[in-house]
Length: 235
Image 1 (spheres, rainbow, N blue to C red):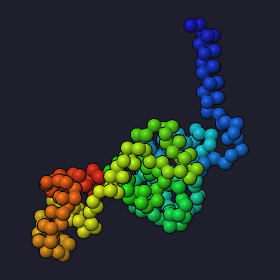
Image 2: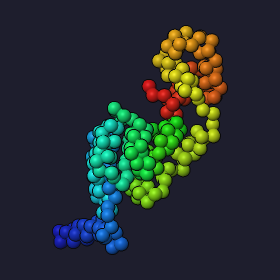
Image 3: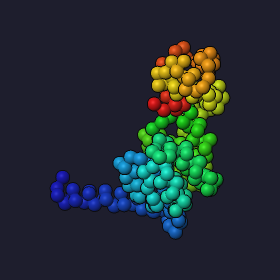
Image 4: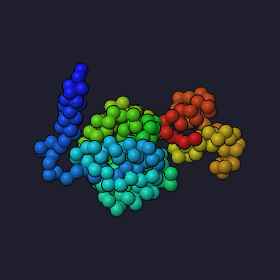
């Protein structure tokens, strides 16, 4: 291919790219979707900001590095959609969702995380998240989710919705059983758990038996691994 032909091909490619990213006629004049990004990893925030910034119908209005900052920036900017990580310092994603929705119960929030445990999904949706996506989601699926949530829809992929349904229909652990599980994860014996929770060793044994039955496991190690995977406890 000659130099002139290469240059012409490059120009055609640039024109096609520009045309693809140009705003559609029906979108001209419409207000852009204001997005707040909250994630404690700067690389993730920068990547999302760059991706969203290239969309003609969206704009990033603020970026937060922790849950507390996310709540404060939300109050300042009142974005149309908030992209929120689930695990962040100072205030986790669920805490941030609750704080934001206490100010405006119609706030539209999408959880974007690496955690897909049924308890994680359940707690986020129960707190008021309108969408739940994993960070390996295709970029256009993420953009579509932002638009759908902005339009008042919910956005939870089928495989995550199935986990949510399983969590809702299954047996749930009590708050005390979760406390016991957390101490089990620290390697404490029944006697030590009883001392920490101010209950008898016999009561601890009853809780452990109930935990095993509800989670369909046969050992403490399996119970802790299962609980961690589901998001019931964090190690």
